[in-house]
Length: 184
Image (cartoon, rainbow, N blue to C red; front, side, top):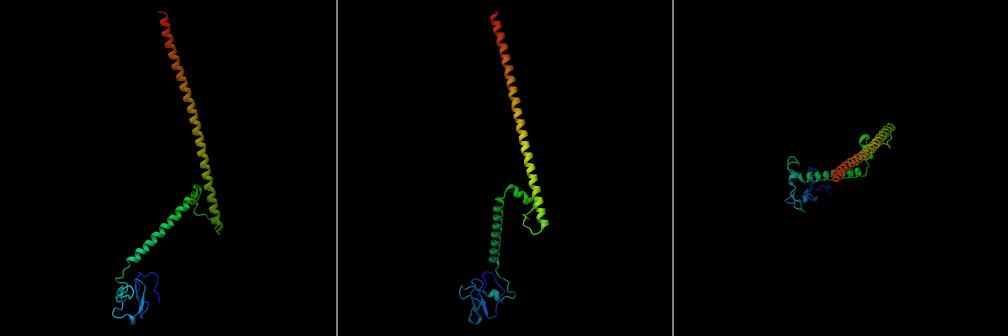
């Protein structure tokens, strides 16, 4: 008779009255073959008496290793699920993420016509809103670029006018200086 796989998890000792099962290695032996140390395993020498002799079979049982193993298994499972979910999210486009956020999971293969139609309606609405937002954004960019071009043209006109004014003033000053020099 073999004990279950979780050999480190204590059990209630009532598996059979005629047999003792080691809680560490799973080895088992008949009570009549136990000898002087009935509850000491003949294979790994673990004392199993606390599982058979206590008033409450779980009293004093050491669950720490089982708890640690369980927590580790749950943690590994949780991180595996999170990684899987993250990798699925990485492969999705912005539009797919928006549709999932606003409409929920894809229900186009649902058996319920109402769920399917509601999802398709929501999906189409989200796509239309995103397209409109994209059009507005493109129009805004074009308008901003047009304003920048106009501003550049005005700045170059202003600079040109300032150059003409400065040139005129320099010409006048030179003209006056030359006129005074000639009339002396």
